[in-house]
Length: 515
Image (cartoon, rainbow, N blue to C red):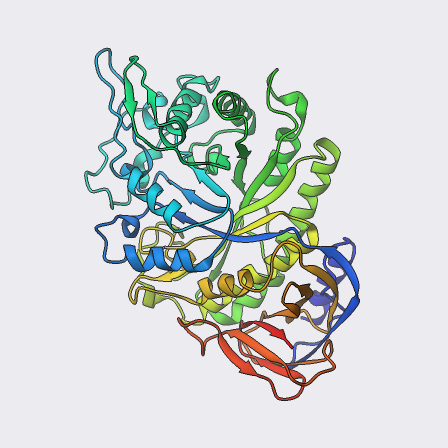
């Protein structure tokens, strides 16, 4: 274990990266954290945010709709992402049948209410991803989509792949995307047969995502994707020159895709260059056993692109993407707009399709997944990423249950949610990040001079209590802590007036300490 930690530290030290990691020591029950408040190393530009997907619980008929929207509103996140994912098919695709010579089949009855609710319960900039490709655009047999708009239906993409697209140039999909965009921003659109459809919507869309995990969802290669991206962005840009585009939204393939996608010579003449954003995701797996989470979620080396990466390994992936970006497209911003952990209750079970009840997950898991995201937030700040997003507001059996931020059995946010709430209510763009030291990898820390004073973000990455000595950061003993841990549960971060200059972090706790 000691040798492993020294290796991780050596690797991390090789990158300019994160100032929180000091010489390793054997795993123990104590840590020393210090901060040099006069040594500002970076001004943060990182927005902590989240995403909400179209799901059974976002239907207005669901009893969970109102508490879920209230929880979303109370986060006060900026750049919040709304995603329509193919797995809840009727909500995600408003044109499930191809147009005929006499008729089109546009139907926004399930999409419209959620878009309205999203805008009503979020503020600031808005990011929308309606990135599922209608099945009828592929040369594959049709499938019967369940009539229930709440039904999970993963078979919708069965057999689809980039080589089977009827129009590999991307124009057909671009025309479809333009109509979606016009429906929500221009008051309506003209369909494939020349008939006008009035919506009355005039929303502002700041960011538009082009497809979602295309290599996974439709087995689309980076070469095929680049053609689609160029077609979509050039078409939408003609009707809204102010919108910006997030792409390619891959998970695990980001390094290989960056080498091709960020190279301007691989894009079409007239493409929108330089690329504005390079976006990707990360989901790391672990068994439902707290003793494995320190390694799997925080410190393990990279297990390859087919696997999600621990926080430390994912940091190295980001650094590799940044180096590629610097060589090929220096003006492109790199963001992580989906990030979470998967918890495997039954070995071999596919995480998003898992049909496990909320109670199947160890209660401490919701703290561990929040802690994983908090560590990655620290890394993102120090790497200069403009955005990192927690995935996702709601999950339930057959819909990625282990990345839920909301307990559908109690209609209350869980510790995963509260970790984001705590960070977003204390930190953000404009914070002055000062040199910070932790004596052990078991506790990650970042000190910041915020608009409301000096604060330190602390994360326990282990399954045992750790007493953290903060005398090297605060001379005053009048310290206040806000803590998300097993004790705070599904309630807001608990408030703690500290005795002296130390705080005890329980397993996978996330805390903010200030004067």
